[in-house]
Length: 153
Image (tube, rainbow, N blue to C red; front, side):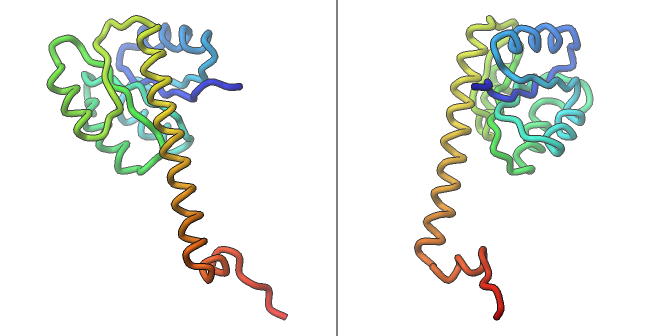
């Protein structure tokens, strides 16, 4: 079974390259972005299970990037990476809908545990959405014909 599809977003290229190798070696499918703008472009093109997002970046910072990710209304969970001095910003990110945060530098095992938790939450949200759609069809059988129109004779 394939691991979660992860988008690593950090302006430190060496960090994203090294973390990408470490996560890939553990079975994750990893893409990287080195700016908030690049992250949004990636998310508009393809689906990711978990976004690992640095808060401190030049240009579009992590909080602004998170707000843009939320506007896309995707089934993805965002994990925040922050320096020790930015815990308040990380808590702001959680208020905006981030799954959780980690302080940098972080241990790979701690990051993997958080990714697994975020991935599990994302899967639960997808299942809930599907169940809600099925329930709407069950409650209103006529809507089935909106989804599957009858052929005309």
